[in-house]
Amino acid sequence: MFCQTGPQIGRLKGALKSAEGEERSRLEAEVMELEKRPIALKDRIQMLEAEIQAIEPKFHELLLAIPQPPADDVPRGGGSEDNVEIRQWHPEGFDPNAPFAGQRGFEPKTHLELVHDLGLVDFERGVKMGGSRHYVLTGAGMRLHQAILRYAFDFMTVEQGFTPMSVPVVVKEECMEGTGFFPGGRDQAYHIEESRRGSGHDLYLTGTGEVGLMGLHADEIVDVEDLPITYTTVSTCFRREAGAAGKDTAGLYRIHQFDKVEQVVVCKADAAEQKDWHGRMIGFVESILQSLALPYRLLQCCTGDLGAKNEDMIDVECWMPGRGAEGPDGRPVGDWGETHSASRLGDYQCRRLNLRYRDPETKKTRFAYSLNNTVAASPRILIPILEMHQQADGSVLVPEALRPYMGGMERITADA
Image (cartoon, rainbow, N blue to C red; front, side, top):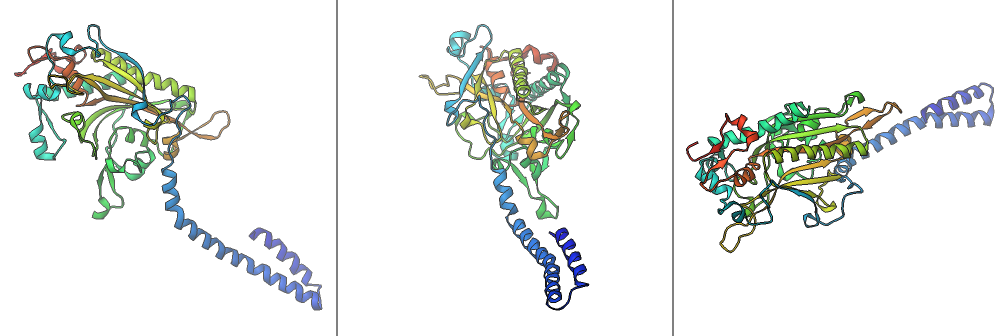
């Protein structure tokens, strides 16, 4: 509008040079009106900018609440009860659908009994220091914990070629929002109120290494030649587990602090490529679980169990003999427990993080696609390891794949 009024005023002033009488008065009035217009427009712009600024926080809040639409091939359902089992795997000689005692010749102990009898965990002192859902891994328990983490990390970085990375576990709010853990999961995160102590921003403890791995390239345009980005990290994770309670959450199953090996892939915005990576990432986990001789099943999550940020998610559940309903003798009959979760997220995280690459054909920037999957989360994974490899004499055989990481130890005993 400013550039339109300038030429108009110039033409009118030119006409004024030869105008007389009423014509001159009319032209002068028109020039004055046009000269006032930019001032009025400037005032109007300032008013609209103030209105936009006032509604911007609510608009941003609404945008953050929009979930990722499920992929077309995800089954429809209302919740976890509608998830679909894809397949099961179990080692030769064991069937999770048959009683443990009938196959192994003795009644299994729960992981709570095993860690107590073998001196692997000190819950009392953990609670003394940190409150409920805290623990202290001791002796061979700590060694086994470190062994599974090191084995999983080496498997991903040495055998699968993923780039090993370290990431912060204390991050800004933008990182939590960008990865989709806020606003929906805010009640599960530990909040460090640095702003009250004079810092410019608050901080949050992350519940997964995925947050840091994805935040690495926020607000960047990565070279298409560098895709796919394949990262693995091992990090301490923190979750408040607000509202979680019950018999099946006891012990090491649902805790506030744990360690996790996480895998993340950032690839081109190609649905077929993303789906291929999803299958490969699940395959990595299956290879690890099979090498540990742990029975597991894959569950395809339905639309009602995806969460806000996932367009597809497959849960991996391990068989835990000490879990589930009580049998006639009052002891658990065994049940599946989630140990891994593999997700494809489309461009949901990359769009929020402003993570892009330049399309070599169109020369335009595009938001990348991302995927993530747990490689191993401990100490939860210790539950099926201990319960599945327990022996009649109360000891636990160390899976062969973990023995090099435990100094060659083959068996955990009370005096180990």
